[in-house]
Amino acid sequence: MKHRTLGDENVQKKLKSYITVKVMRENEDDVKDLPIIYGVPSIFFMTPEKEVIESVVGYFNVEDFLSYISDVEKKILKAKSL
Image (cartoon, rainbow, N blue to C red):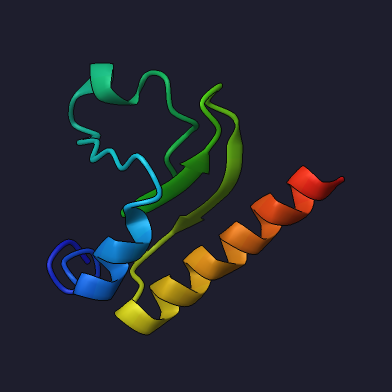
């Protein structure tokens, strides 16, 4: 996923709106403040207060990941309008 999906130009453009952090689960200090990780890769969309908005585990191809990001953005906008 790192090279094919996250390395894609369109995905990188979409993720510029976010703060992205790569965490290696082998380092306990890296994961202590994160929700429980059930598998890899794990992707979390979180608020600045570390509340999970959306999470998913597993590989995405470029098209599916872009669609997933769009779905998360819709969920965020809907929550803000309430």
